[in-house]
Length: 489
Image (cartoon, rainbow, N blue to C red; front, side, top):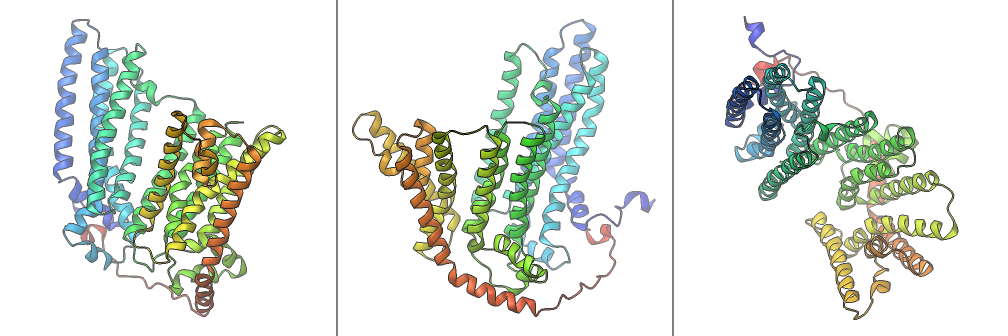
C-alpha cells in the first residue's frame, strides 16, 4: 500500500512539501468545507425548485458566485503567504541549502496552489452534472466557464506568489487591494449579466476562438513573468534571472505582433497589449544595477561573438537596458507603421512623435536617475515617483488651461511623458515644434545613458575576458532522494 499512498519520486520535492502542508492548512480545509456546504444547500434548493416547477435561474447565479469566490478569490490570495511564511519562520535559508534553485522553489509553491484549486474543481463537478439533469443548462458552456475560471485562478495564483517576495508591508497592501478588486470584478460581472436579461455567467467567459487563443497566450506570458519575477526577488546575486525576464518581454511583444498579423488583421491593440506586457520588464531593466560577477557572463561568452552581441541586450543591469528598450520600441514602431495603410505626411510625423515619445517616456527618468547618482537604494521607487511627478505637471497644466489662466502645454512638451499625455488628451498642435522638443529630450536621454554607462561597460568587458577563461564545471549528480522523503514536513 505504500506505493499508493506516497508521492511519485519524479515529483518536485518542493511541490510535494507544499501539497502536504497545503491540504492540511486552514485555508484549504475551511475553503473545502464552506464550498461543499454552500453547494449542498444550493443543490437542495435547486431540487426543491425543480420539483415545484419554479425558475432555477437564481440558483445558477448563486452557483457561479460561490464557485468564483472560492476558486478565483480565496485560494489565489493564499499565494501571498508563499514566501512570506518561509521568511517569518526562518526556513527560507534552509531551503536554499538544498539543490533546489529559486525557480524550482517558486514554481513548486505555485503548482501546489494550482493543484489544490484542481481538487476543489473536481468537487464542484458533481453539482455541475446535477444542475444539467435539472434542465436548462448547457453543459459544454458550463464546463468551458469552469475551465476559464481554473485558468484565471492559475494566473492570479502566479501573481500572488510573485508578489509574496515583496516586503511584508507591500504584500499586505496588495492582499487587501486584491481582495477588494476581486469582489468588485465579480460583482461587476454578475450585474452585467443580470442587466442583459440572463442569469448565466457563462457569457462572461465566452468569445471567439481567436480571442480564446489570445487570452491563453496572455495568461501564459503573465504566469511566466510573475514566476520569474518572484524567482529574481529571492535569488542570490550569482543567479541570472534578468535574461529570462527580458526574453519573456520580447516574447510578449513578438506574440502580439504574430497575433495581429496571423489572427487579427489591422487590429494594433494586440501589438500594444504585447508591449504593455513587456512594460514591467522594461522598468525593471532600467532600474537594475549591474552585477559584476564573471559567472553571469559565462553563458554568453562561451557562444562567441554572437553571444556577446546578445549580451548587449540581455546582460543584467541598466547599461544593456538602454539598448533593450530601444530595440523593443523600434519593434513596436516598425510593426505599427508598416501594419497601417499608407500615411500622409502629417500622420507620419505624428506617428514619429508618438514612438519617439514612448522611448523618451521610458528613458528620460532613467537618465535623470543616472545624473543623480550611480548607487540608488530604491531606484524603482524613484523611477515611479518621477513619472508620477510628470503626470501631476500635466494635470496642473490642464487645470490652468481650464480656468483660462495660461497654457503651459508647449513648455511641458519638452518632457516626453507630458507630451504623450497632451497628445492623448488634445492631439498634436504644432507638430514640428513637438517633434523637435520630444526628439531633443529623447536624444539627450540616450546620450546621457550611453555616457554614464562607459565605466560599467569597461568593467563588463574585463569580466567577459575573465569569463572566457573559465571552464564549465559539470554539475555532479546528487544523491537519489525520494521526493516524499525529501519533502517530509
